[in-house]
Image (cartoon, rainbow, N blue to C red; front, side, top):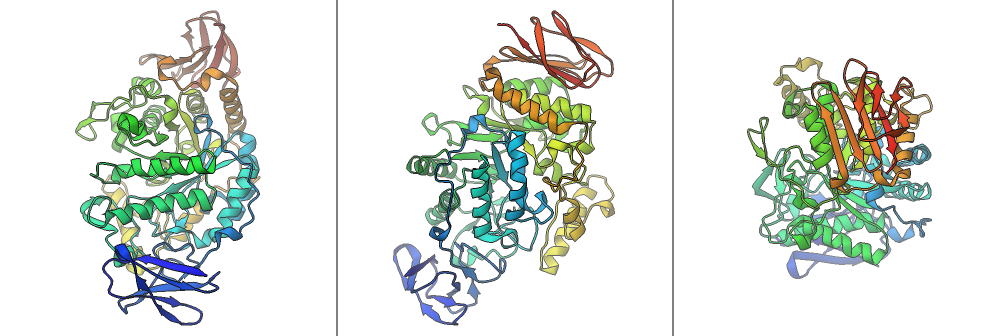
Length: 578
């Protein structure tokens, strides 16, 4: 017996239509705008809901959309899958090394099952957590996934529910935790039928991608329940180890208990019930420490958030890029501040924003923040999708990686970064609606044309070649490793794990010295010093005490009693006697 339920508070009648038989069953109204009906033998059944005698619509909580966003929903029996990870326990997030990947471009086949073939390489590199870009159903066969509409349904082209479960189960067998990127701030422009069922969206606020989700207006109690149930489903039914919440600065909620606090609290409850580590990670450009502050101290309770300022400071200095928001960065002082205090803009005036921005994080460890040199946004939102490996030398890539893995933050890599992939990661879509497809293509050209570039040179998101060019095939043995980057990353990860001072997230124990004029920086964390020379000339970098050389990016470095001499664009890591 299967009970079908749907929330449609404004409907006068609701029917369940069974696709195979064509049967139409009247649903009974319940309190709070819910409707229900029970069906015998529903496993694998395709179905629709019909409101007030109108067109057939997919289930807002559809567990599977095998024919895409406009097709019928299909029943999934989560109890039928044979899991083998009963003894699995994810490592604490504070000890994580995260690897962000996009299922469609990580391998040539672009499926959950094909991604399994790359897990061994990630584990041997030292990765502990794999972070999947959104995998819920979105329009078309390929895309980034941030225009998703069926939040409960794993994407059909990736392999559906069973494929995702196989990937998670295999990841756990390989010793890898799995995090999932989820989007709760907006819905995609095609296939979004939620507004037909109830007040899921609001015109009270707006986002860069369209109407905001209704989290504080009439009917918002059920909308919040919808999103929290979605989060708990991924963690419970798919055995995922955590969630990354996309762009929480575009989640608008004036309630006394903010949605993020409610979600974090419910995840904590599930964590206690399940007896395994679960993580909530936020993406935010607000530089607001409340996101990762405990609710008892007036915060929202997320475990960690992405640190954009660290990325911006590192990218702007290493590449000298000053376009867009990078105009706010570019000095070694910014790099030093990011390493020491997380936020460069902590109440400081931002020329790009033309206002003061951010707030200083106080009494928070570095392990509440995730540092990175690349991610899908910072790469894919460039006009040509250039990776760092296309914008700077191998020598500078190694300097950046050394600072990343020796910083007091949780480090994250983006797929292909570990070997210096030379394929771009572009913005790509596969919208079937011709008007929407044309609007997306024209919008992309106009966006970058307004920056002074040649609009005709912008890759068309709708062109299949744009998608295929973005495939990194991360586990392909034919990939060419640039300048020993894979071994460099492996040794850095091993060093981080083996040196207690590098796993200590206390920001007050990080000391950073630098010379803007001579372009050198030295970061000391307990007994470990990371010394970087970004000058065009060889020079000696002063050390507070003698140190033994642990690792260097150049064979031509010389450790002396109170300094280390380095060639241009190189880094050395030393250990001091305490």
